[in-house]
Image (cartoon, rainbow, N blue to C red):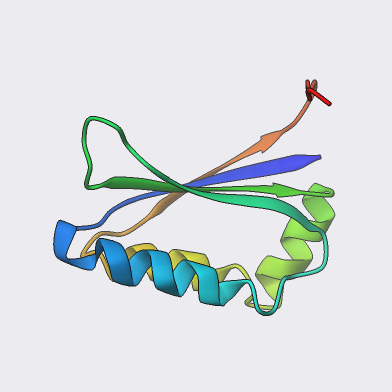
Length: 97
């Protein structure tokens, strides 16, 4: 599995719009995207992150090359910042069933 974390800042006046546009993104889900979460920092409320879990790095790269990951980046760009993405290979997991 592969994960990406996209970080950006969004002002309070744009919080509702951000959440609505995030939900709209998932009408067309890229192949290989397993889970995606929109998070808001508990202390710095203008700090937002989108954490995505992918089947593989190849699946992420295919979606990126097809322009399917740009939509998340654009969400955080509209918050007057340039979002930063970091990528991770997932080595171990735990899931409570």
